[in-house]
Length: 157
Image 1 (tube, one colour):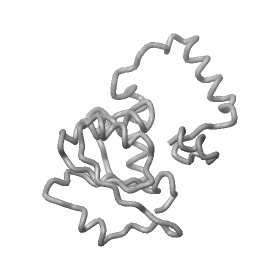
Image 2 (tube, rainbow, N blue to C red):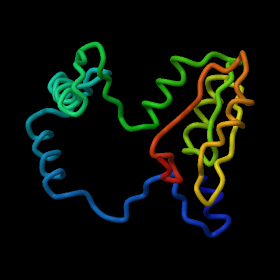
Image 3 (cartoon, rainbow, N blue to C red):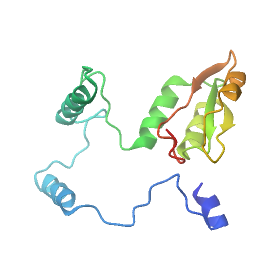
């Protein structure tokens, strides 16, 4: 996606490239954590206090109770979360339906899983989900339909 944007003089809306520095309070907290010795690898699915805070916020927002030890996994960003999910659910040869344009990590992750990717193009001006095309694309081999909302990069809900 980035190479295509450069080639065509376009803006890549598929990835975030902040053109500003992080907030001072975040940088200071990171420095303090290093000074306090909190600079080692955390356990693979999140620091306990963070998992608990996420579970509490999730309950506040949704009313649903989740177990912070068994139902919360903290990742190092969305690409890791997407890869872990896809690689855990998709087997070689499984069909996965995606909506184009799509977030650029989907293609690489689905390729690693051995998925047979079926794309459906969302078209301007409204980028609406073409329900009839989706129905005709689904087959007995369809394992997943990759949805994200708001849709990245179009912003469609």
